[in-house]
Image (cartoon, rainbow, N blue to C red; front, side):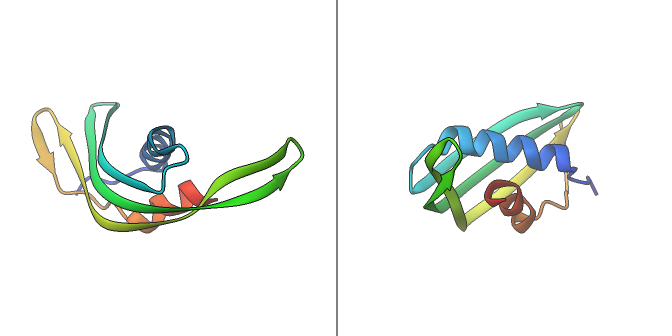
Length: 96
């Protein structure tokens, strides 16, 4: 089984946030390479935002994400490997 590392969760979270912006809904694909592994997440996610007061001013941040559907694929040298991806861990990286 392929172990999903914190670096992979962080890359997935960063790309997700970059794509989502202030949208309340995401349906699409996130793909990237990590070392020798091709990673691909296909998902439909409802996104909830909140306003927070920061020293720089008020900001809208992601408060919660609720998956409608998701799948996460890992491929090494053309072979797809079963992995231990956990959506709740991704959520922690996004909503911290």
